[in-house]
Structures are given as C-alpha cells and as structure tokens.
Image 1 (spheres, helix red, strand yellow):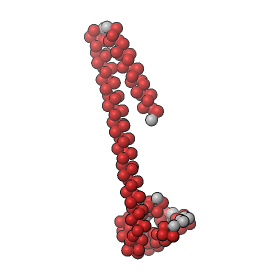
Image 2 (tube, helix red, strand yellow):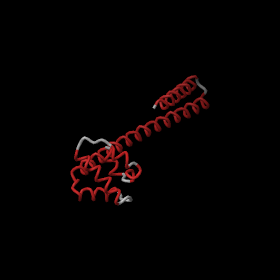
Image 3 (spheres, one colour):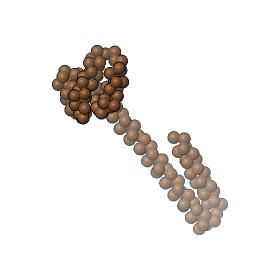
Image 4 (tube, rainbow, N blue to C red):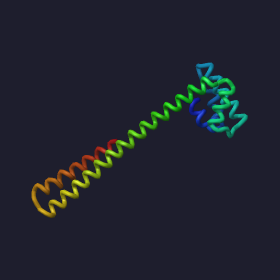
Length: 140
C-alpha cells in the first residue's frame, strides 16, 4: 500500500524521497516501479496522480500500476462502507435519543395533567433510559 499511496499522492515523494529510495521491496517489479516513481517525480515535481499513473504505464509499469490502483479502489470502497456504517449507527443513536427525549416530555406532560403515580414512574423510566443511552454513547 505504500506505493499505492505514492501513486495517489505524488507530493509525498518530494517530502520523503530518501525514505522511499531506501524502502526495502522484495518484488523486483515493485522496486522498479518505486524507482520509476522517484525518477518521474524528480523530473516533474508537480505531477498529479493521474499524470503519474499515465507516465508509469507508458514506461511499461502498467501491470503494477493497475494492481496498485485496484488496491486503492478496494481501500476506498472499504472506507466508504465503514463511513456509511458509522453514519448509520450515529443516525440510529440520534433517533433513539430523540425518541427518549420525546418520551420524557410526554411523561412529564402526563404527570402535569394527571399527577398520577404511573405518570411519575414513566418520568423515572424515561430518565433512566436517557442516562443509560448517554452512558452507552460514551463507550463508543
């Protein structure tokens, strides 16, 4: 994934050229690609990600570039799915909190209107549920 990140963010090469050049790679194909990335970004320091990929493909590194770009796409899809799952979980938490607050308001109104022990118990139950929900939210 290190080379894949360099493909997507070629500006990293200028900032970390020495580390990149010393990075051990066990695959000769990837070592050659790394060297080509270093050479290309030295000649064209402001190169963008798309242009870098095109240049490397034209230089004969199309198989390695394609594999790395597939890894990037897979990682982006995984990130998208995680982000969506997190957002949906946050939405469910928000809906639950809103529902509990609404239940508390209704219980309080019922107690004001009727003043029954049952209404007072609803208030206590709603407050307990809100507190539990709040504690649960702090754990995540």
